[in-house]
Image (cartoon, rainbow, N blue to C red):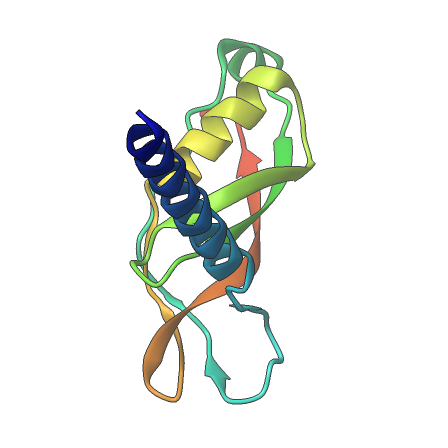
Length: 126
């Protein structure tokens, strides 16, 4: 019985240490930005435009949305946040469209790196 308790406690300690190690590695990720020395900016290879809502179409207003996100080494955009929104539905559609964008990633010393970038959108009535 005591060896079973010790075995369970040891396994729990290994799981906790593994979790802490992964958390530390994720927290230590460097995210580059425009102007950082030696970093080549990402290049857009696929762009999807957000669909304007019926409200935007009918009122013929121009909906402007500014987002910020991180272009990952795999070329996808993550950690998207609204910097300046229009309304909840337009913002949601804009975020969904940005998630479909693809980039050649930013590089440093020839290796793909994460890169923080801003994105501006204008949704107009068609």
